[in-house]
Image: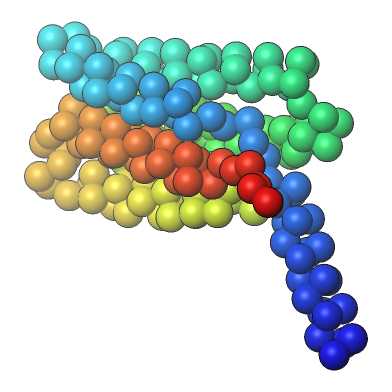
Length: 191
């Protein structure tokens, strides 16, 4: 009886520890906002240069999310959450830098911009997958969604529909990420 009780207590402690190892700096509402920005980017890129609109949309969304994270880091986070924030940032930065560099080289080399959505979804999906151990449960599915989207965006149908592919991939992907973050928010335990 004592061994089973001790094992039960150890499992409870392990569960509580695993919840404290999750970075809570991504807010579902902010991520949902970025989904709306993707929809707006799709609408704007119908009448403006998509190679300009989409990077500007991504930069704006990145600024909003990073701004919120920076405010939380300085004013709301414990030392533990600050350490997790730095680790998540270090997981994301190589993928973001690679995506930006790849975009610059791709466009400068005169390649078709029609493959940029596949490049962007692939690098963002890899960013999510690399940071997955520090993010709430289910984020890996979103990373996989982005990875599969990058494959779909290389098909002839999506290749010809640059704006629609970008809008659907990032609009749906960010909405899915917002839902997963919402479901994984800590709830107050009632006794």
